[in-house]
Length: 139
Length: 138
Image (cartoon, rainbow over all chains, first blue to last red; front, side, top):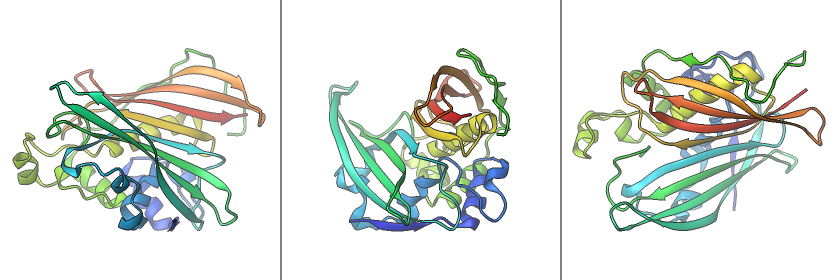
């Protein structure tokens, strides 16, 4: 299963401003995305039914963002492209928590392909289900 | 980048300290990214959850760290960017980004594969983010 994400000019400008970049690569009529822009595939384009994070089955009240990684197989995607995205769970593991419980980890990879089906980018997200309510790191 | 940038392993970029972060910065990022988790803008919600106030979206400082390193080594040359979230970032925090070259190797695609270690530090000295990036440079 997959979904599409159009790379929009206005959204690039808005995101570039939010992450405080003034690099010329993000300006003009055919800007490339800021490096972390593809995070918005999850919030703005991914149907709930295809959510890689939901597939982990973690308790959303105890979920933390542990790591985020972007791999680009060539120059970054550009405004006007329509990417096809597919998320899957690639790894799960557990570690003992500090309070005697168990912390569960899950790694979700989203692949981004261009109109020709070429893999252009991958996002790798590590999510953590904590023992109790989050007090540290990003919620 | 039209000319070859001279880089050596161990070389550090000039650090950058951003203006203190505001709640408006958090909200601007939430609107841009579409992540409207209330912990980052809803004060009563954050307090009821057990936090002293709202705090930044981790991906905001990740984006600022990416801004810092791509200002140095380029945007279209970036091939990998990774962050680990280590500490929360609060309103008024002044973030300083640093970058150190850790490896330079010839790339099979031609050019050099340059690996960089990144830090995003709070004014207290604690690391909010630890990161890595790789660039394909001429």
